[in-house]
Image (spheres, rainbow, N blue to C red):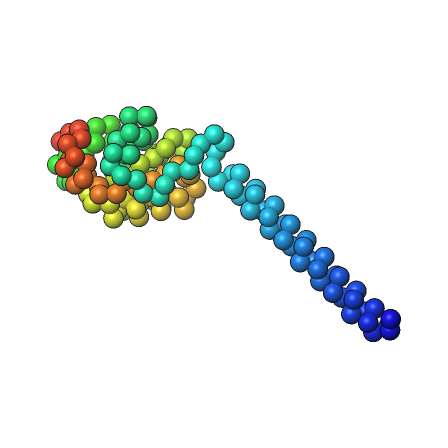
Length: 148
């Protein structure tokens, strides 16, 4: 083999070693992130759940976060829920539990998806949004209370 052929072969081997090394590092980073993304023993919540799934999570002790405005809340809300209007959510994150599942609720499901994303971006891991909102909750005959 010529000297030039040996140099080319060494460059190819070196390139493959780098590629494999980078792939191994990427896999290790992905595995570490995946292990940290959901606390041990907990199944990740779907980004959006149905009203009946939300009712079941509530019955199991999930934290219900209502992101509507106070007048909407007074007209009817889920018993035991906590009101933090969407516009205040980012500044009131310290009021929310880090170690509990959180179901975000609004009137129809749009604001709750935004609220869910705010919480996920802030590092909350067990967060979901209730599709259909209080409109669906009430139409399905699930319990609600009125007043402040």
